[in-house]
Image (cartoon, rainbow, N blue to C red; front, side, top):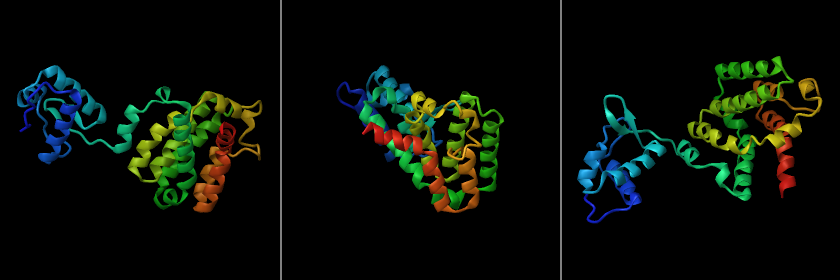
Length: 234
């Protein structure tokens, strides 16, 4: 049972009660959770307050709705929850730059864990993305889609679920069109044959080599545009 609140509560107090209820009753993902009206009765408060508190925990993935079952306890991940509430549009330049730098740091340092966990199936999926990008090198929009997919697959291939979820958040701070268009020079379409460019094909071949130092070196060259941006923004 919920412990009653003696006076009209704030929504955050109700939210705290929900967390306490799940913890005290040792509820696990998939377990049934009280309905809105039941919670209101247990807490002796109005349903609109309960409804707002529930909307918060739903957004976090802590509680979800199932067809024919009503509300059940969900299975949120830390980073997927963070991703739902963090929006670059609401951050100042310094905060955005911190997240931008964080992704650079992660991608430069994931070579060892990537090579320990990557599977032939992962390599095959990365190959498909690279071939799609190579099918029309001049298509900048295709490049943008392939770029996201390629890096998302790398995070997934590490086998780290939290890291994979975090990638979706970090990408929001890594897709500014101005920086990307700086890369899309007049010889953009020839980048796969340009020895001075480090493409997704180069990164993939480095991964295939199985040498973490080689992966790190090629990834650093691949991200050099963004490393330059960090220096310029200081």
